[in-house]
Amino acid sequence: MEQNNMKRSPGNIPDEWFSWKGKDTEAAETVARPSLSYWQDAWRRLVKNKLAMAGLLFLVLLALFAIFGPILSPYEVNKQDLPNQYQPPSSDHWFGTDNAGRDVFTRTWYGARISLFVGLMAALIDLSIGIIYGGLSGYKGGRTDNIMMRIIEVLYGLPYLLVVILLLVVLGPSLSTIIIALTVTGWVGMARIVRGQVLQIKNYEFVLASKSFGTKTPRIIRKNLLPNTMGPIIVQMTLTVPSAIFAEAFLSFLGLGIQAPFASWGVMANDSLGAILSGNWWTLFFPAFFISFTMFAFNVLGDGLQDALDPKLRK
Amino acid sequence: MLKYIAKRLLIMAVTLWVIVTLTFILMISIPGSPLNSERNTNEVVQANLEAHYNLDEPYYVQYMLYIKSIVTFDFGPSIKQPNQTVNDLLGRGFPISFELGIITIIVALISGITLGILAALRHNGIIDYLAISLAVLGISIPNFVLATLLIQKLAVDWNILPPATWSSPAHMVLPVIALATGPMAIIARLTRSTMLEVLTQDYIKMARAKGLSPWKIVLKHALRNALMPVVTIMGTLLAGILTGTFVIEKIFAIPGMGRYFVESINQRDYPVIMGTTVFYSAFLIFMLFLVDIVYGILDPRIKLHKKGGA
Image 1 (cartoon, rainbow over the protein chains, first blue to last red):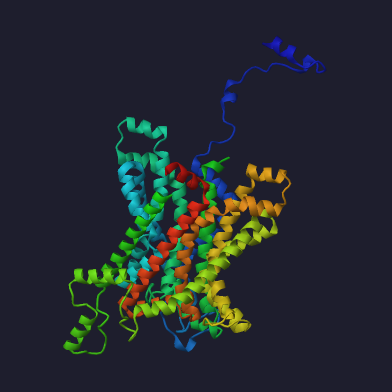
Image 2: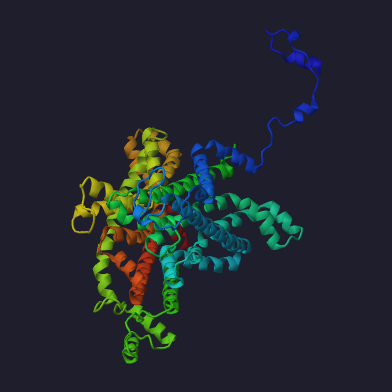
């Protein structure tokens, strides 16, 4: 062994410079870098995306303010104070007051509660129905899949907001009916994504192995298929939340959203349409700012997650 | 290709039937009748009114009458607007909404694609960052907020453009900007990302090696492939613009379909709600169908399928 080594060294370098150190089998087998799970790696890449992290930070702050914001303010959400209507932002009223003298700061955080609640609930319900429907359709395949997909195709053709408006006309506008209306056809997009993923993954060997051990279908879907489809599902969820928030604001704006005395951002924006023309910009500015920034934050976070969770981009 | 069109037509018909039936079921399950108002009409008048609008027939007869009225494209009289049929409202409002929608689509497509191409060509340059920022802002700001801001700044503060109505090209500028910004942003983002992908392909390198001018490469070779995803999302964009016209027409006081629709919702004017919903849905579903066909014509893979499949 040693002699062999010496013979091979190039002519102009003296052989004495080299010596055999022996073999360290343990060192050769150690992994130099810590092993990262899929989620750790995704998180590491998400942290590097500054815009997405800024979005995440904004959303965390927003959630904190939605929970604790009203405590910071001495005013009640629906307390009218007519002599003090249209006060510009000051140390008394941080965001000013609206047409009925209500404190915009307090109302903004109550609005945040409603907007975030509507967005998250809609996304969660879409997720549950979409996973069950898409998972079954993709996993069963064949005729079942065919029929289930035809139904989806029909539902997908229905104009989303028109159906929502129709439903709200009938059900009457309230917090729960808005969430119902938003999810009646909203789950279709999620179901399509889950089905596409499941179709792809169900043919992999580890699923075949699981099947040959006699695992039951629900367990295969739960344990083998779903964890591997989480990436696209999470991305779809971060995009569902802002679209639900937008839809709620849009409906409130048409007079079909949350009804007084509740304050959602859409209601606040709608109420202050007239006010802005008389120069009381803050009544529109704050709800509009928070609608826009929440959508912005969810969108950049969704984009960031899309890159971070894509296994193809893993380094 | 024929088989494909036939399949799409069938799904289109079923979707239409679903929306028509759904509309009917929802309308008859609304609590209260549109004829119930604060005025106390005597029973004979009430019965006559109900007979006039066929509200006294059993549901299946109403359903048949309803289907018949839709097939013959006659949506009946409006309940709240005296001496007006739904067709009158549609005939008056639709051309205006259609004009608004078409101008918006054209503006959004041209500006979005241009912005997307410029951003892709100057990847990571100033134009790219500007385009991305503009796109994300455009997606995040709801059109009704943008519309109000535009009126406040351009019409009220600076007095450059008229704030409302729909009577001259100058009146069209603000509503079209408010409505087109969102779709423009989506198109720009999509064009940019696919353009970036296409530009790294071998056939683009080949075209470059042949010594073609950069603009010729972009316009003749890259753009056609980069635009496929834009065609795919046209259906969704159309639906968004269509529902967007509801609020935009409300804010800018444009006498289009959207405004009648919103008014009819607030007044519980059943025939108008049903008529406009069915009309809008049929229009949208037909547009989605057209988009699919255009996609089939543009995408060479579907063309191949036609030759092999027939």
